[in-house]
Amino acid sequence: MMKLFCIAFIFCIVSFAFADVFDHPLTKESKPLFQSVSQTIAAHEAQKGDFIQTKHISKLNRNLASSGTYLLSKNNGIVWQTKKPFPSTMIVSATSVVQIAASGKKSVLQAGSNATFESFAKVISSVFQGGEDLSEKNFDIFFEGTEKSWTVGLVPKDKAIHAVAERFVLQGGSALNSVTMHEKSGDFVRYEFANVAFPATLTDDEKAFFAK
View 1 (cartoon, rainbow, N blue to C red):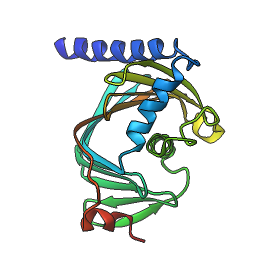
View 2 (view 1 turned 135 degrees about the vertical axis):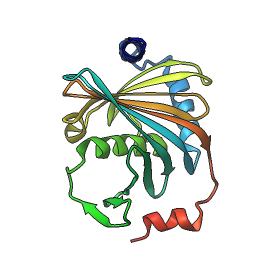
View 3 (view 1 turned 30 degrees about the vertical axis):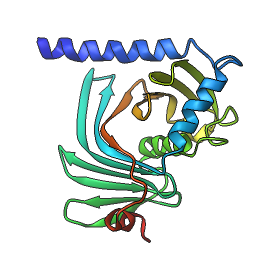
View 4 (view 1 turned 90 degrees about the horizontal axis):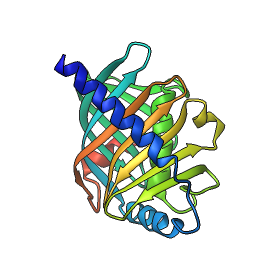
């Protein structure tokens, strides 16, 4: 009973987060603070740490969780290393999506084979590039908060992304703390980041993930 209560409580918190931020479209007054936040995130060449992914399946009223480590590289892409419940690695660059099984077998995913993760990757890449990539040309933007604690709502204008994900909620302060992706199906996926670090350069092992 307590477990069910906790799941329902988390679901309510996420639902309220969506409702709140999307009541605050970006305005002339809030735009300077939003741009400052964007520049703070985009200033980091890379971000890495631990993640917890929670996927809510609305039809089953069920949450599925996974966890591991991640690397977001401004110039290279994303490395997603899942440790639980099953080990795997996914590498998303500008040109490909590669999956590495626990056995070490590597396979290149065809376009659209993991549309949810690709949509997430495109939005995160936009966030880390900042500037023109995270602009009103690409998103309907909603924003509230301060530099120390902010929430950004993004509605993609790109039809390919919007077909999978209707809206995104990003929360953070000096770093990006979480991303919630709300899918057209009614499901949502929430990524929470912890033990965040900002390496100035990648290690040789990290660079090897992006080597062709």
